Amino acid sequence: MKDNKRVVYWLLTGCALIFIMVVVGGITRLTHSGLSISNYKLISGTLPPMNEVQWQEALDLYKQYPEYQKINKGFSLQEFKDIYFWEWLHRFIGRFIGIVFIVPFLYFLLKKQLTKSTIKKSILLLALGGFQGFLGWYMVKSGLVDRPDVSHYRLALHLTTAFITFSFALWIALDIKFPQKKDVEKSLRTTIRWAFALLILQIIWGAFVAGLDAGFIHNTWPLMNDGKLIHETVTIEQSPIWKNFIEGKSGVQFVHRYLAYIVVGIILFIWYKAKKLPLSPLQSKSISILLFFVLLQFILGVFTLIFQVPVVLGVIHQVVAFFLLAAMTITLHRFSK
Image (cartoon, rainbow, N blue to C red; front, side, top):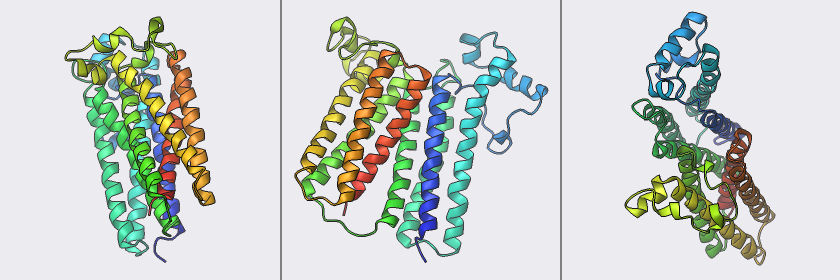
């Protein structure tokens, strides 16, 4: 039987692993561990250093790069091991995800258990996964040259691609699980599509905030520092003025702050409009869950900002972003024909 429940389990397992990988990636970022492994060996790099000699060699290599020379000079071997662990785990999960996606896909393909449509979607999914792996190393490389920090553009691309890969894998699973066509209200479907696009945009600016450490300034809410709706630093850090909103710490945080209101507002509008329509139980439930997660994420964002991005809150904020994207994907699927 083609597109059977085992195919669905395979895709959902991949979704779960991508979720875990992004969580570990968030911890890696928040603990400043991402530049601890300064080379990339696809096969031999699977295992961490196994003895003190190998650990010392890894530390000696780390000493050649800006993060050690400018920030962590004098790091002990144990301190190095602590940050090495998270980056190694992040890369190990990435390798494991590759195996989990590729091996079952080839099995299902050889056993002719996939429809042509699912084969095409799965090939695109594998391409997205491969591109994500490349982006990880491309991101790390940006922090090994002069500045001991990765490019926030590359970080955003890396993170957003992970979210999109997760969403696409979930969409394929939903296509198989719920193949029937649905009667939908066109204007509501269009609004949900806009909400999905705005959420992706908010994820991108969230990555900008993380990449620029912009969560450590203006740690007040609902107004920015000095009780201002728009702090003067929003428009003066970069020139020309538009660069403030993609490269300035204040400007990037400003966009992330106020885009959050727009995302919450449009989902509240979807919920309000849906209440007046004759929806199926699955459609109604998906919108209720979507509303719950967007409100939870908004509250978490406020507390993460106020408390200056503690690791625990930062990770939880990223975890709930994943649940919010999943809820948005499921809702959009419920209202797609």
